[in-house]
Amino acid sequence: MSAAQSQALPNPMQRALSRLGIAAENLADMAGPLGVTPKETIHASGTLKLHHYKPLADSVYRVPVLVVTSLVNQPYILDLVPGQSMVEYLLLQGFDVYLIEWGRPRREHKDLTLEDHVLRLLPECVDAVLRDSGEKELSIIGYCVGGLLSVLYAALTPKAPLKNLVCMAAPINGDGLVSLKAWMGEGFDEEALIEHYGNVPADWVQNTLRALRPFGKLAGAANLLNQIDKEETVRSNLRMGKWESDNIPFPGGVFRQMVNDFLRGNKLVKGTWQIGGQRAKLANIKQPLLHLLAQDDHITPYDSASDLVKLAGSRDKQEIVVKGGHVGLVAGRGAQTRMWPALDAWLAPRSV
Amino acid sequence: MSTEPTNVPQVDWNQFSPATMWRDWIVKSEAQWSETVSRLLKDEGGGAMLKKQVDEARMAHRQFGEMAQAALAAAYLPTRADIEAIDERMGKLEDGLAQLSATVVALREALVAQGAVKVARVPRNRTAPKPPKKSRP
Image 1 (cartoon, rainbow over the protein chains, first blue to last red):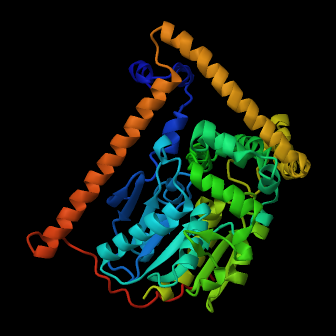
Image 2: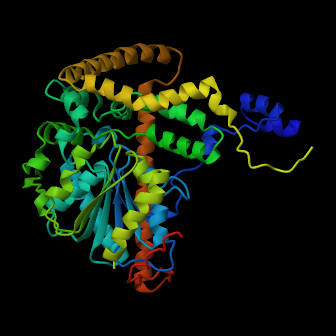
């Protein structure tokens, strides 16, 4: 590198390394721009945005796919970069893909509840997808809390234009979330938290999730250093690290319901959860159902998720457990070789 | 001396680095350490501990916020509240832009429906699943 080029580098450490002949890259640049698969926003309401991705195949399956993302994480985990994107994979297989981005709630959104999400916002998006695609039914793919929202939608809307329901690591059974249940039991004062902050702050959400696996971050850093010579591994790790540090505040109203009804009361599995005056019963779900789970998921452990397929009223239902963790299920190397092909193999014949 | 390549496997000397071995040990032990700590946190004291932490964080947040606000205001620097207000306004602008974008798409679709504009569409004619991929030999 010439002296002029060396001087052009913005970072003194990079300049020093380049003088020594060591090519230094900006770590932020190595992650690259995330969520760049071409799309357009076809519907927006408050912080919610409904995106439609440009098809990448020469023809698409008749039934469009609506991806429902988590409320507490950024949606770009499903569309990191070309080659590491579940959305891109689905597009290449010939699916017509739409995605809900819930957005970052502001103080004015602190009273948003599950009723708002499941009975108003999600149905609005379903209508928008059907209008845009010109079809009469769609498939829903829900990830993590987005999976729970999708399940509630299907359970509360028996006449929903839903052809297939796919959940990925969707928590269903509050008793299975042993740590969260212990931490947010009767001694925990969620009202004080909501009163002070309005929405549950993103760093609070992040610290709670990290506490589920206290040494995970340390082990991840050590593992990364041991693979520092593998450029693509480093890039992939930086992307996921960026996403893991980019949580979204939890709307106060939804958090209150999740703590009281889902965790403490475990009302979904018991069939006693009232949302908008209706009882959410898993037996009401009649659509073909696939639940994809990760073997080493510490955020949605198997015990918190396995009841979905057991209790759903669908005749055509299947559970697939793949190796990996909560994030690796949708975005890691294992996702590319195991989960995405399994999802395609299940959904494609049901999308015609 | 022969310069022909041999089939003798090369030793990866990095694996004998003390730092690498130490990090490997961390990676291999992490699940056990996390499990042990998680088990300790799962008892009934966990909720009480979290409640105490939340109370402490709220109090510290308020006290530090008040202290910092006064100092920052004295130095004509923006406070946390100012930054949060800007964040809220930026969020509103972003949402407004998304709504505009959605409206433009809706207008385009209306024009397409009237036949005033033509847009190339990918056909929805994929009627059968793809043939199963052949397994590797």
